[in-house]
Length: 179
Image 1: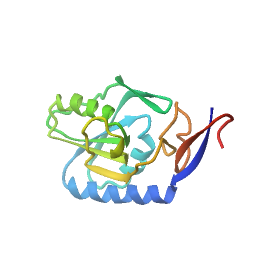
Image 2: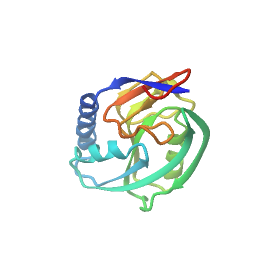
Image 3: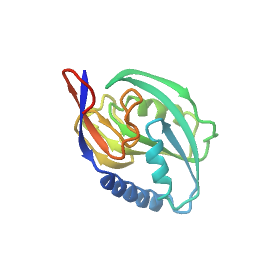
Image 4: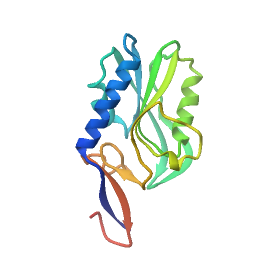
């Protein structure tokens, strides 16, 4: 089965969303230090652009959770890389590429809440509230999307297409390759 890509968000639209998020988050955390927990692998490109827009002292740590196979959520979340930083009493901002079913984010929020941070918020580049299976709401959202499966700008399908400079929606074709 092949796939066809159609542009969902241009590089310019993404950059504008990242700048807006940087301003919102910087205003909220002015004078505070924040630990950004970047969810790998998808959020690394977004996080790299976002941190350059932030105007407060920060540290970075990384978590990796697995829940997708192809274009479908497995519904089972596995931590493949936990954060290394102690977060008790600290401001923590989770940086996610996309919040879709909400299962992965709900799992991560529960895990980190148990470590007693001072504050715990979520910044998502893309939010798909119409796809939720559990009730989670990001505090900061770059783009709200109700469409299909997205790739590019860090978002992937089986580890592929992260390098695309824009975000595309994937349509499956009966046979063939990527168009």
